[in-house]
Length: 80
Image: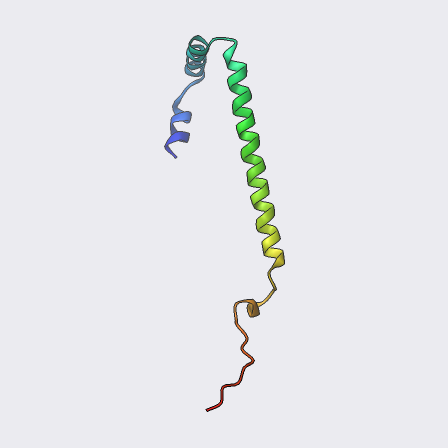
């Protein structure tokens, strides 16, 4: 929440100053490489999320419906 609050407090010209500082620190040639790396990371994260969501949906579909899945059935008789 504080991150979104900080982003909301930064005006347009302040973003330009931050961008200029980044260009000065990393140089024009390193920024495309940096953004490519960030893009690959975001893509891998999304693929992982989609894979986890698919596995969760598959697990939900594989379980039997109803409350009987949680109950154990015991068909053995105990004689005293």
